[in-house]
Image 1 (tube, rainbow, N blue to C red):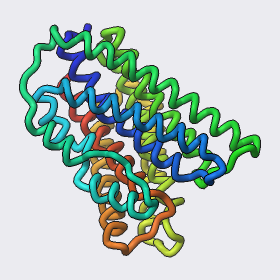
Image 2: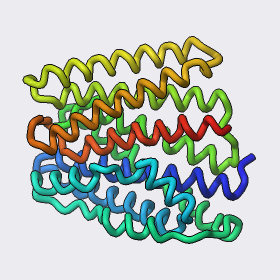
Image 3: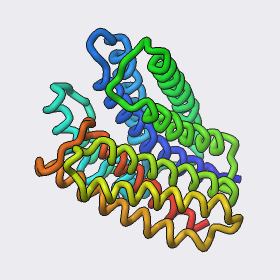
Amino acid sequence: MLTNKDIYYESLVNHIYFAGTIRSFCTTIGLTFFKNNQDYIDRAIALGYKATDVIKESILIMNKELADTILSSDVYITPYTKELDLLTEGLFDINLFIGVDKDLEILKNKTSVNYDKIIDQVNKLNSDSLELINEFKEFVIEIKNNLESGKLFSYLYMDFFNYMFDEISVYGRDIKRIESKKDYTEFYLREFTYYFNELLRSSAKYIRGFLDTNEGEYFDKASYFVNAFASLTEKYLKNKDNSSLKIETERLVINYKEYLVNVIESLLESKTYLITPPSTLDNFLTNINVYLFILNYTKKL
């Protein structure tokens, strides 16, 4: 049974990471339509603002301990967030309204909170986030159905919409677990691990597809990680006791992070070209960081 402190801690970590992910997804979605689909662009922007509201509220009620954890784990702001956002703004002539510098200042100057007194705000935020999750998933399904029927065109892979739907579904499941005050169970952790292995496998697959065809080395390494995460997922499905796989998992995730950082730095140095908004790579990096955060968190359970 979760305590109020547990609910507070686990809820806000979810909101900071996943609401940020929704905002990133909405930016990507909005940039992949023609101007004759302005309605979809506007809806993506509106959902991005709703996600930003969840992030802002989470930051406002965050205490110093959690703020320090968030900053050190890079699950919200990575060392590349600002540069990738600025590059995206410059390339697409948009304003993302991210406010990274302001958020950093707020997070660095947090104080303590009373978990029992603030729990009502946390519960309200969880309820609001579920509404956001459902609205985003419905939006993604609508787009995907229209793409499949030939009524809509997007420069984004159709399967990428499946990827977005699956990742935000993980968010919804965990918030519902927290609302029911249930601790992590071994079965839940195995399922969670399965989903994150699949998310990282998918992101490696998309990086491979977004790369210019001349990028042989990066392409080959992306293919390696696609296969490595697929193999690891199979091992998790076959083994009831996956404790022996945790070291192998962490090692693979760390290696994948090193690879992605190299791709990002090469992009920022104009040595690599990808057919995706630069901010998409920051989302992939936060995927990795939050997975490492979860792997480390579960060691304490």
